[in-house]
Image (cartoon, rainbow, N blue to C red; front, side, top):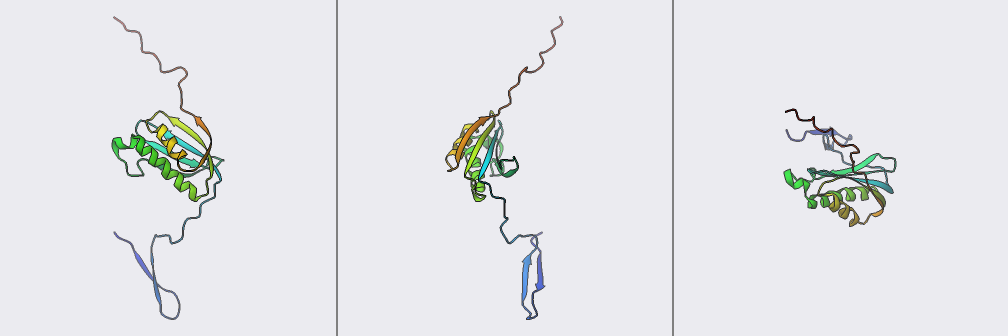
Length: 146
């Protein structure tokens, strides 16, 4: 496979320049975020941290799988700490200074992700728990017929 090289004549002096096809040379200019919402979704198998602007549009996200953790290591508190730090570092490039923390789920990386965000230098205005709780539960089994 490899990278394709395109050779083009740039000016009349005969100099040739080559550009790598498909590679962007400039940095991607993202929208600046001063205040944001940090969503931590922690399940038994993975931890996902996404950072949104105040309107709710996701700007940056990270998960344990994207950092290279596989299998049961994705669900560890250590992986959750690294996920939170990675997402916050990406958001700091966009100018994130303060954020509201929204936590959802019952995984083992929940508290560790909160500690990872708190230790990264972002000022946290509030912490909200949005873990879904059943109000009626599941349907009971049918009565046993003997």
